[in-house]
Length: 298
Image (cartoon, rainbow, N blue to C red):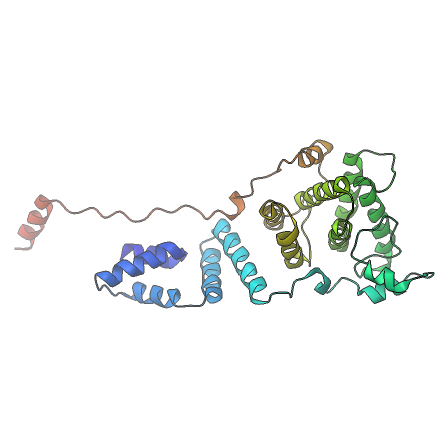
């Protein structure tokens, strides 16, 4: 019964189901056991929501983060196809994007290539942005091309990556964060160069270590699941940055080089590790204490 009271607070699923199963074997029924039976009978989504409330109540941040990730995964599984990049609400429609180019010989071709690798500059941002962000978006695209080796630029990869990070971290520039991720997806789609592709993936990791997607989290997650190798590494970095918060300052050149070398700048497990708990320990009373208790009652 002590275990039932404890697991009712944390709603750890394996522990909860074990307590209910053992109580059933000995035909034990208490208010706590009855409550846990009801929780175990919930759908996966409603169980997750109950666990989230419990984790919030006991202020277990790791458990709360883990359950939040689980619920987001359930949402994506429940609606397959909903979070394809093309469905991202802030992404321009290809026809609308192509129409923004004043002079164009083949607008249909431009439409078809909106989210595919481009060796030339772009004429407009890929996402809907305020007018004052448009120029920044086009400049960032050229910097991405330079980092990936698709445009000549007299600078180092560390400086180029730093330029992107510094720009998006400027005050009121958060809308550029989703734009950067859309541009990177574009340049990694149908990219004919293995070298450019490798550098593009490095740049995605650099960005994920610094700032998370804003409104495109589920879309980025689904895209990374299908295209990143290994996808878990990229998704873990993204989730860590989401839960721990974006950097206030850009990564240093040393940190950027570390990421390029394949190193992670943080622990990808701690942020989603539930707080440890100890199960109640039952100690059988000694024969002497039982006899003393009976003598005291007589």
